[in-house]
Length: 187
Image 1 (spheres, helix red, strand yellow):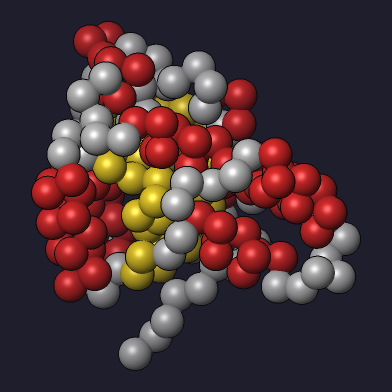
Image 2: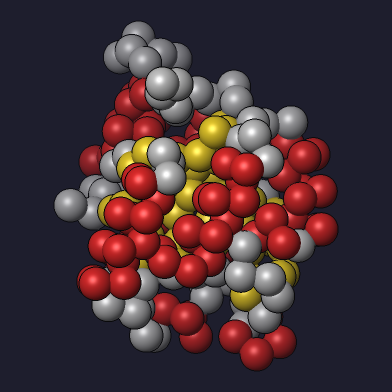
């Protein structure tokens, strides 16, 4: 069994559909938005690309304004899986990265379909359960169970950043630690 571990040289952070119109119906929306911002800020500090998607932006609006400043590129989509959209596949390929770490909504729909399609396309995939959600906790939990059953590993957002760093001697450790202390990740 191959174990996927966060690697700063191979990772891309993918923020899925964190749009105000979507978040209004999401279970624990502050947790998801906070977790996405937290991980995106660390990714930016470490030079890890951050891609975002927005579902049907003409109807559901733009990326959440608190998340947008930390994203390198936002791709509109109509497919539930980000991989169902050519522009996303191209943006992802341009990063040259082969492992995707996912945050966003909804766990059992867009996050799940994107993760499964990424895995089928030979990407390694990790999902941060503390930074994904659905309209209720049952849908969220079932989505996470399906992902785990498919071999896609869950990982806490804070664990991601410490695996990216690997050591307190990392040259960016103090900068990242300031983010940890200033923007405590969700439980």
